[in-house]
Every structure is written in C-alpha cells, then in structure tokens.
Image 1: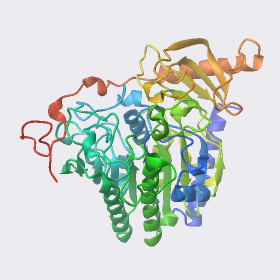
Image 2: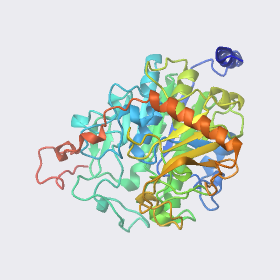
Image 3: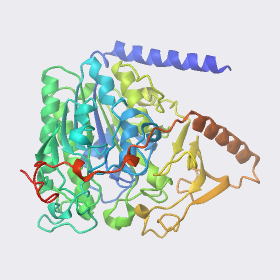
Image 4: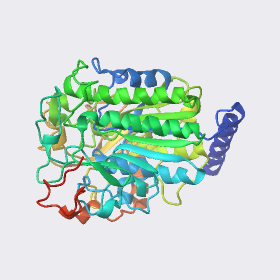
Amino acid sequence: MSDMFVITVRLCAGVLSTLLLLLSGSLASPPNFVLLFADDLGFGDLGSFGHPTSATPNLDRLAAAGLRFTDFYCTSAVCSPSRASLLTGRYQTRSGIYPGVLYPGSRGGLPLNETTIAEVLKPLGYATAAIGKWHLGFGANGTFLPTNQGFDHYLGIPYSHDMGPCKNLTCFPPDVKCYGWCDVGTVFVPLMHDDAIEQQPVDFLNLERSYSDFAVNFITTSANKKQPFFLYYPAHHTHYPQFAGPDAAGKSLRGPFGDSLLELDNTIGNLLETLEKTGVINNTLVFFTADNGPELMRMSRGGNSGLLKCGKGTTYEGGMREPAVAFWQGTIKPGVTHELASTLDILPTITKLAGAKLPPVMLDGVDLTEVLINNGKSERESMMFYPTDPSEQYGLFALRLGKYKAHFYTRGAAHSATTPDHDCPGSARLKAFDPPLIFDLEADPSENYPLNVTESPEVQAVLEQIKKAKQQFESSMVFGASQIGKGSDPNLEPCCSPQCSPKPSCCRCS
C-alpha cells in the first residue's frame, strides 16, 4: 500500500468525520474551547488516575463523562518550554524557550512571531481570555504578556509564584506563613489585569476567587453575545509552595498539596456550572492536562507520579507523561484511550474543530479529532524527549515509537530528589547508552526492565526503526535562538511604581 494512498484515505476519513458532525448539528455553530493546564501535577495525583485521597470531584466528573488519556505527554519537564509547546504546537527548541525557564527580569519570552492557539482563533471572531500563570515572559513594558499573543483579556501572575519573596504567600493553615525556597532580592509577585499591574504583592488567598469570577464573567458575556470563545487557564496550583483560600484550606485529606488541588477543582466546578447555566456546555470542548511531572524533592508537598519513574526535570515517564481528560457533552463518548497524544496536538485539533487555518510553519502536533469524536486511532506515532537544557550537540535524550521507548541519555534532576530511586536525583549524572535502553511501556510503564537488544531480533528491528525516526526528526529540527539565553535585567522586573526607591521592596500597590 503506497504512502499516498494511506494519506488520501486519512484525509477522506477526516472530511467524512467533519461532515457527519455538521449534519448532526454538533458543529452548527463554532465550538467553544476551555483549556485547563495544571502546574507540576503528576500522573498519580488525581483520583481518576488512582490517587486514594485526592479530593477532585469536578475533575473526576470530567474523567467519568469524558475521554481519559493514559499515554499523554508534555514536551518538557519544566514550566516555560512546556507552555510554549502547548500554545504553538511546536517543540520548544523551535521557538527558543530553552534552557530552563523564564524569570521576572528575563529579556526574552515567547517570540511574537510564534502563532498561539488564541491567534489561530481570532480571525474567526473568537473571544479569547487567559487566567492564571503565564510564564512565557514579561519583557520590556510587558512585551510578552498574553495580550500581545492573541488574548483579548488576561488576569494572572506572569511567572511562578515562588519567584518572589515567600512572605507574601500564606500556606496552611491560613494564618501560617510559607516556608521553603522562594526567591529573594526580587519584586513581589504582581497580579496583572490585561497589561497593567492591578496588585503587588498579589493576595494569594483570594486569587482563585478572582480567577473564578473573571472566567465566569468571560464565559457569560461571550455566551450572551453568542460569540464563540477560547478560555485558557494555566493554573499555578499545584506548584510548590502550595496555598489555598478559606474555601479549600484544611478541607482535603491530603494536606497542603491536596488543599491546593481542591481549590483548583473548585474553580473548574464553577466553570462547568457556568457552561451549563449559559446553555453552551453541549458546544464546548473542555480539555484538562498539566505542564510537567511532580516536584518530588518536596516529598508529600510535591505531587505524585504514580507508578511512573522519577518526576519533574527528567525525561523519564514521571517527568513527561501527564493525566489528560477531554470532555464535550454529547459529542465525546465516555471512555479511556491508550492512543499516543501530546500537548503539541491541542493546537491542530482546535484548529480543525473551529474550521480555522493552521499557522504556515513547521508544526509538531497532529489532529486528534478522530480520537476525540470516534475514540479512533491517533495520527501520532512517536514522541520526542528533550532535556530541560536541549542542545544540538546531544539532541534527543529519549524517543517513544509506538509502545517502545528508547533512552539515548539519562540524567536525574534536583527537582526529583528524595525518592529511593537512585536514577532520579541530581546526583544521577549524565549517562550515554549505545545501543539505547529500550523499554516496552505497555508491559513496563515504570521503566524498570530494559529489553535485551542483542538477544532479540524483534527488539533489534525496533531499534532500527527508532534510529530512523530519530534521524528523520533531528534532521528537520531547526533550533530557534534561545530566548532564555538572552539573560535577565532587574530593571525589567514588573513594578507598579517604576520610579520608586529602593527596589525591589518599594514595588507595592493594592
């Protein structure tokens, strides 16, 4: 069977699927999209994915009534690059969001010539809004904020909430100040409303309520106008140090992490209720996942990767495989899919469902419509894994092809310290493998038992396919100029009183 014939059949199937949706009325009007993105959440942190004490009734409802993914991946085991890939459908190496993450005074950010999901939808008349943790750059005069990346409105913090003095954070119970590692010598974390600072330091105990009210108003206003909308909610929950407002603090069985997760779940519940009240829930795709695996160095306050190996900062499964749920009442049938999928696939999928045009650039994502609508096969055959500091010298650290995953390099990370597994902490130095370590992830998702390459003709054949896929991908990869490599300037840190002195402590307003 020729490649051209296969491509033609796939195209015809995709067109037929869309026509059937149109005839059924499901796409009589453009669908709405709500994209939920948790922070440092592990594969084993949700009740629907096996955690015995997490209180997540609304996420559990999504999982029960939606499609739950078992093999869903982010593209980086830290925040900024993972978010860049989600919004652009491109590996972070293309957009230059590497190595590591962006900071309050970073000179760089997500390049403005990159096309986000919001920018794909705007030409079709979509209302677009973002709430929560952006972490794709602030820049001079807020150059890289969401309002310059296709979003009409934004309410949130521009980077992680630990990138500032801990003394403006309150943890658990509500009257006890945070402990832990927060940045010192930098400005208090601000709350941005569109491109202006609304509050500095932000009131974290009431922040989630502000997010919820903002999102409810956005959905209600859009629905009343009969305007299609895209809401992106990259939560700061459950990143360390955890905190929760009065409606969630002390209410879970899981301590501070569980309370933080519960507060996120409460907001998701409010959004679902609003979709129902406004009558648009049957025309709205809700997609939930997370940016990277748990920060195991925080022990019980860092999240849980379940049966997967290691966590944040590593290219093992615990750092890269995420819980994911797609919910669309009346369109997506409840169930579980073992199809390979990624955050990279969100942009192409939303583009297809909205009837929009794909950006005229090299995309790494594939359309998941067939998986969502018909619980069918994914077009994704492989997944590539870069370390948090990718380079052309080393290239890919790992590659998944079908059910097999090959590790060309392994390395631990400080983020994944404290576990009994000696491969996880930062003391586990870089190791190269030739031939690579190969695991059958269907039989061994914990990556405990590498297959014997030399003794199995079948595994040798798989290895040749993996090498070919690696060579083809790396030959197509053009590394963008590192945005994080541009360094930082304290004068670029957001300050509500830019002429005040002494900085950073004078940067206060409410």
